[in-house]
Length: 287
Image (cartoon, rainbow, N blue to C red):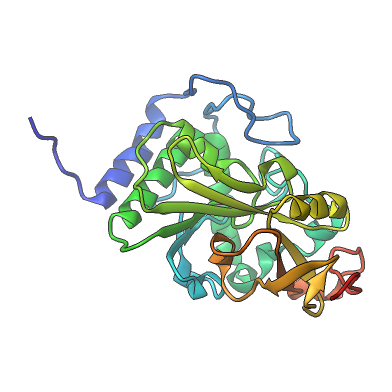
């Protein structure tokens, strides 16, 4: 017997409303999704009364809403949350962020300067922290809805302004993910960086981002053939002997970049006035 077809908008509405029917859900294994914190060692949803929390009908933004992702070679989706501890629970969604990274955060860059945009990002974050089960299922629905209508690969970046294992949470549900989806992210967590084949069979490329506190880890990652991102005041041709390419060319560049290269990013916004060492101003070993 065939199932009843629901338009996507109605499906998401029912998915959001169903969050009120249960207050706990776990996958079969215990996984730490919040590196560096004491939260999230089981993937569970703890609902509580909180005036800041409300489900949202749309979580992911199309790539054309951002100046950099608009230049991608692929159709794209990106998720923006409130970074660091900007949430009612005080949970750090950027556990390896340095002082320089926090100060120069792109949360308020671009459209992030608008109060309504910041409010929406905080509301998404509260939704995630208070009902992760429904939040992750909604992300999956939005990804698959877009992927079915996309010719070629759909590039999905779930950590636009956070550094959490959101992709792993999606895969851990066991839900279907359309085969043309490819995931990518930036991280400051060395163990998370690399090119991975997920349990679902999908590719996940994660670039390790340099800060003023993790340069040794970044160099080691590059030496092993990984891709790194470094913020410069002026782009050099090489950094510590590794070739630098223009990482601002497009956001999905890491999906096509060769091994052992640096995605050079120009300092933007508050980063232009950085004095912490987060922005590289003197380049060593330039070829």
